[in-house]
View 1 (cartoon, rainbow, N blue to C red):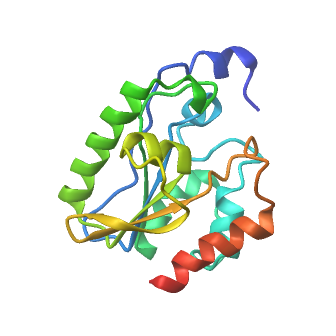
View 2: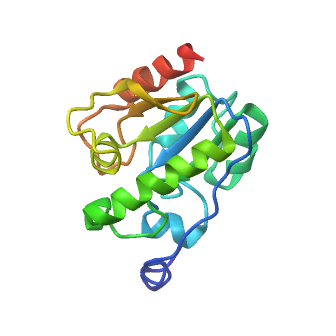
Length: 177
């Protein structure tokens, strides 16, 4: 378990993308939380629902630990973030950071050409891609040939969705593959 000091020291840190050319899905978080940055693994905070939801929605054959994130590449999946900078909460990000993050993410997508870009965080998507009326699910716009799919943020801080609802929304993307 990390100390409060170790977690606080992760402010502003970044973590490496889990990415390769031609993935089926590139999942994009909003930005790393401090715990995630401290451990160096995406969705690394205990209690984050990303890994259980990914498994229950059929993306992984078993529940992966955050430290196994690179195993996703063998399955055709990767992880990045809209904004690289770690913060205590995503609401600390400025509009300018999100817009710049959206441009950076679009460049990554054009370079790596995943079939789908799945952004986990509708508010971040709306701001970063200037789509204020976007809804969850498949979007009309694409980045090159890459389709964009928006999912709810699986953070435990997002109490708007129960685990079963998150699983069903993620499973819709899995079925689209």
